[in-house]
Length: 101
Image (cartoon, rainbow, N blue to C red; front, side, top):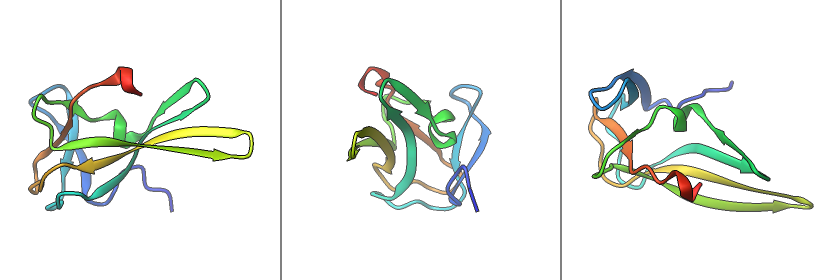
């Protein structure tokens, strides 16, 4: 069954901006929360996980770039990784660096 967000994350009102992603349980440092963005050719796709992340100068998550080639198809995806332990109810944040996607 398709799940747009990992079980450990939910969308909620943010004091940073509009809505954001929040831990539903404690998340350990280094946890891979799943794909936040995908690029195929020149097309960039933001997943629900990537669509609700808010910026922080002191983020608790970052994106890890993964590149793949299957025959003629080349694509890149970014997974969201916890930089530190994230407590239940804490907002997940990244440092916006959109030019790197």
